[in-house]
Structures are given as structure tokens and as C-alpha cells.
Length: 249
Image 1 (tube, rainbow, N blue to C red):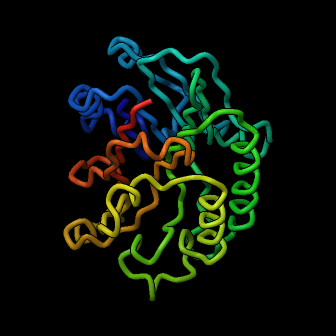
Image 2 (cartoon, rainbow, N blue to C red):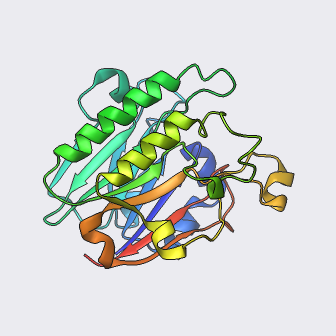
């Protein structure tokens, strides 16, 4: 089973930059897109054979997630039942006999002023409660908006305390994994340095000055079923790059 997750930073924009060809090339069973920034979803995805589940933000041009699935789920849930988070269109959960697949877009703590750090930390806690309330193993993929370890950011000394690299955000991710979840990229790739987000500066990509903000995390019960996990950092079109998980379930 092949899963690709990608913060596309605007669905309309990424379609113009070759998203459909990308989908056809990789032929994944699931595509999980974040930050779609639109309520308008083209019929093209259905014509490609995917079931389409969209959860846009209430605010136009902001946030939103989209899940494409070749396998029709048993059930679908939009959000986590808390309005101030759900109006931003941040989570879609689709359920199958053996697992849940969660597409998530975590809030940004707020560039510069950290004005949304408390909001994000509250989201972290509520997301944790939500996932632990589910009665099956979970596959969770998306933009977590945190660089977990020093190895996950190009300049850990000078960027310490920036949004996405605060002690509080990193501690929560440590805590979340300790509850019984596995960072699939680190499990497969060890200490390889790869990043999933780069500023739009051409120099940042050329110099490999990035952050690893995007993750596929699985319940520990699924650890031995992981086949491959990678970051497709040769793909352009967004400030993020796609991440890949292959798993046998």
C-alpha cells in the first residue's frame, strides 16, 4: 500500500504545476494533501479512479486538507469535534477494517512573534486525545509543522526557538511518539539528512537548507509492516516536497 502526503500550498496552483501528472506517475493508493486553500475540487481526481474527501477551511484561501483514496473507506470523519480547530479544515480520518488513515495539517506557531504557539500546543493536546480515542492502529501523515530533532533542521543552533523549532513543540512530538508511535522515515532511513520544507528562495533548495516538517507516523503495532519511507525532495511545485510511505496491511 503506497501513501503520499504533500503540503501543496494551494491546490489550484499545484495543479497548474503538474499535480495530475505526478499523481499518474506515482500511482499511489492514497494521496493526502494539506493546505489546499480552496473549496473547489476538480472532478479530475474521480476520473483517475479516486474517492475524494475534502475538508476546506471556513476562511477562503486558507488551510484545508484533501484525501484521495483508491479504496473506499468504511467511514469518514472530518475534524475532531472542536470548532475552533475544525473551522480551519485540519483533519480528515478515513477508517478501514484494520486501521485508520489520518490526514493532518498542524497549525503554524506563528512566524516571528509565536502568536499562535499556545493555539498550536492546544491543538497538539487535543489531537493526541483524539488519536488515542480511536480503537484501531493509525497511520498519520501530514505537515506537523515541527522539526523534531537537530538533524531535522539545517541550522539547529541559530534557529532554536523559531516557530516549528521551539522546545515546547519538539517536546510534544517526543511525548507523542512515546505513547506508542513510530516516525517511519527515521525508522527506515536512520540518521540520513533530508528535508521536506524549503523557503521559496532558490538558494535554499540548492544549498539544501531546509526543515523536516512533514511526517508519516504509525502506531507501533504497524512498525514491522513498514516497507519504505522517504522524502521525495526532487519534486518541485510547493515550498514543501512530498513524503512517501509504503506499508503492508
